[in-house]
Image (cartoon, rainbow over all chains, first blue to last red; front, side, top):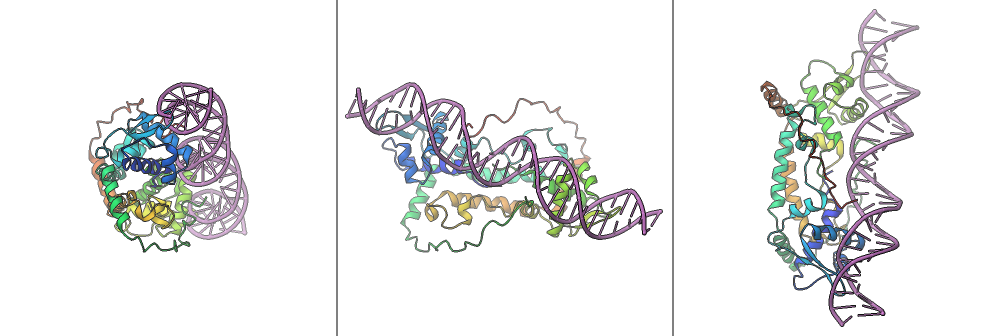
Length: 162
Length: 162
DNA sequence: ATTATTAAGACCTTTTTTATCCTATATTAT
DNA sequence: ATAATATAGGATAAAAAAGGTCTTAATAAT
């Protein structure tokens, strides 16, 4: 639970790439390779992003995608919701009357408040901010790149024991 | 994405029920029926909760489960993590060196901060608090219980169009 | 001791979600 | 015309989630 799906992650990476290349159309293949995303998967994601107005597409030779809106206006939350549908943590928060405990269930209030905090945070983060954050990071020597040591730290059996 | 899993929801409901019945052992069947949870599923969840020290089990006639710790000490976060394993939003946050963008990827910082806010909130919510919140809610007439009207409001196609 | 009750444990099935790939078609620059 | 590209859609395969069944073991009441 609570993983960012690949789809959302890939979409964000792709749009981030376009934010750094606003002067031209960029092909899916180029984006995918630059950002380590499977090409056919990204292609489909970008079809969706085009329908939703995040990017413009240009067919034909030397075509590709470009941002349709300013990186300053596009938030992480929007991207994620575009790809995964509206975020809601629990059915009960959406379908009133669905949960038998409904109004009385106190868990949902806690959940809802947490959700609001979280989503607010994502809504406050624009592509522009991400691009400049990345720029700062690139500068750094990034020396302390431990050799992926803690390999043992894997996700034990987890959950209800299948 | 971002749904509270049924398992976590059910576990929380079950523990909530026990918090309101600390004077005796309560059978899985009773809990399940009182809280609208599938009996075998809840049984399995409670086995896990017993192993993890949340509840004590008592076999035999008139046996059942009881809380092993004070409702004041048990947080929502603990319950969820007990049932689903540690919460982490993205592999990259756990497997250093897994994501090719790794240190440079700015999305993860945003994600991580949001996660911290969210988890902090869940960690600050105890069973005790939930019980008293529920008590307050029960008092209210809960009249405005709309007849589950908006049935049309279902979860459209969503996502990448399968 | 026997019996009824209840948890423990081991499988199993179905459904949903995720993550992919692939093929055919429409467009466009050259 | 040709090559490069996006569009549209289906196909699928693997994993996780949700839920169920059945047998065994413990325990309390009789």
